[in-house]
Length: 404
Image (cartoon, rainbow, N blue to C red; front, side, top):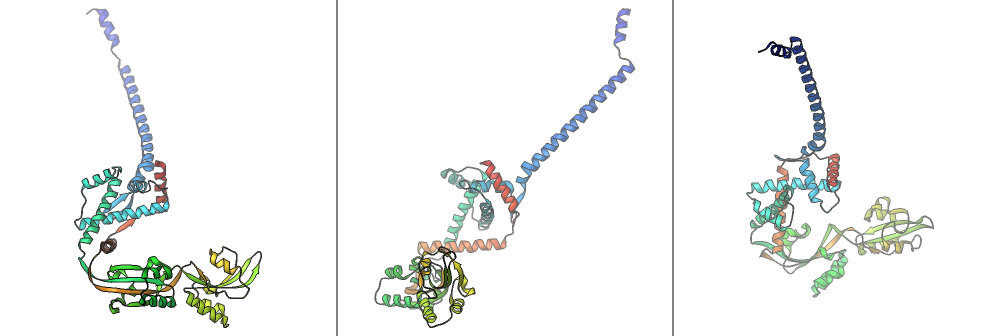
């Protein structure tokens, strides 16, 4: 190798000073890179943490526990969305859906304890037949629907083929006088259905019930069945029932073009009672005292004193037509009105008694009663925790609305 070549090679070899300088430079670059990486990681971590807290964490929060099964906010929002698909979600539906989640899980767990299950294929088939989405939410809804049907079938299978029953017809009437009239006409061969339409303020409350277990009847009627012979008709007073008819007695003590009328009222449960009290008032008894004792209107505590009222204040056309044309200080004749009052008389006709096969309608009713009793027991023996407050339900409603 020539001297010139050796010299060039020697010149390209870094000195210790150059090496030291380069090493310091590389260390500085590494420190800058590490610092930048740490800073960038911090920024990404901060952004990720904020995203997690704002967009992920709330949906993972447990909002309902049913025994050992938990439901998070994400599930709740999905269920709220699914069950209000054609509705406007609000706080009412938010609370309703929470209850449905609890009930559905109680049904699922209770059915499992009875060995009642639904196969996935059945769920898929029903979802397909009804053209529903295949998400877990819809699978759960269809599953609990099928389980409820299986449970009803199960309770139906536990029923006997025959039970002691009574073949009965019922009619609700307002007063004893009307009941006696109906009884006389029935004993003379009158048609029950015709009399029902003519005299009952609520024909749907009675009618020809056919063969039914005694437990299907109002308790006050069922208690009399053992002492009632086949073919016998009884009249039973029931102060617990509500009927859609009442009678006003009205007295107006002052009138004013601006204020309207100053009215005193009584609301009675039957025309018979109203007529009796009208006679007592005509004989000089005190309106306020009788109102406190007999009236079913909320004004009874003030002796029936309504104060100044104008047409429409009571929401009754029948009342207004009489009250605003009534002579001062005169008590009206009974004014019949479509208003709710307590108490009435049952006309009960027992056609026959004995052991009979259960009709399909009776079986379905008994199945439902047994199911309801079973479900009530599930609620009693279960631990249900609902952590949804008003703020969380409002947040869930907002998330559903944002999806749409």
